[in-house]
Image 1 (cartoon, helix red, strand yellow):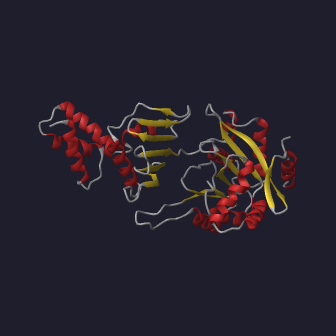
Image 2: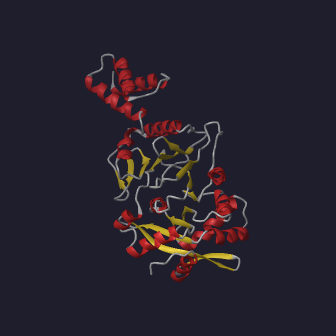
Image 3: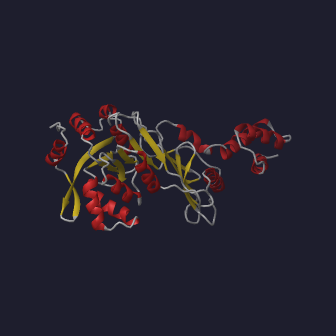
Length: 374
């Protein structure tokens, strides 16, 4: 029996077994289907079937590498890895387009989602803190595309970020003062810029006498704090039921006696609930937001608030009262992540803008009895 024929028979047996597929189960199926196949054929079939049915298949070693942030498949012979050294092409190859498609569909099934011609794309969470996005042809013209984003717990504190060169000593002291003064802030930047790491470090500076309630899409934040409560959103199941949104969790978080309310990433209508919360006596709130620069934050907030039905004048009014600062993170070409800007929200009539005004920040700190480090 040829190796391709053996692989097809094992695939059929495993698909109809109805049992959890492990490496041991794959090996057993190969032995039972191999007949008089040679030892080398059996090993090849076992390795190929294990890759196809267990974990992320041939992508699993990349996901397990400590520095990996993204694994991207754009064609059977084009597998890319992003990490500390930037985006680079790997030596991993799939046998053909069908193999890439089967992996994408199996990963989608592991998330409780469907991926087929009727539903040719999926965006969901895999077990083990990996975000899956996949698109099938003909939507993906060149073949099935798979994007796996690895979310690792943020563990740095401010001191370690300072040692990594994220900011200097003066900014370090300023960040400590911002937390002490209970100023509300939003951290901005692009994907992989270090927003979550900075937020995690700042939350670790919060007084242990304060209770932090954090709402996240995925459990990335893990500050060294004794009163940290995390609520995680839940996507709908395959029938489209059971969804718990960030907006739902912000509402629930308000009932949990928070001293500080945090949204891991503001990305939709939950911004309306967050602004409402921060305007009702919950000082020191925080969150992260995708934005190219601090000056773009009001416009980004407008777009998100529109999803929740909040008109522009109301958004600017609430934004001016809810947040004080914007901390902007950027990832440089060498992979270094730096805090590049500290902006202050400033209201000019009916419009809120973000300005770079150290004197104004000093005034905000002084109004709360905290001395600025300059």
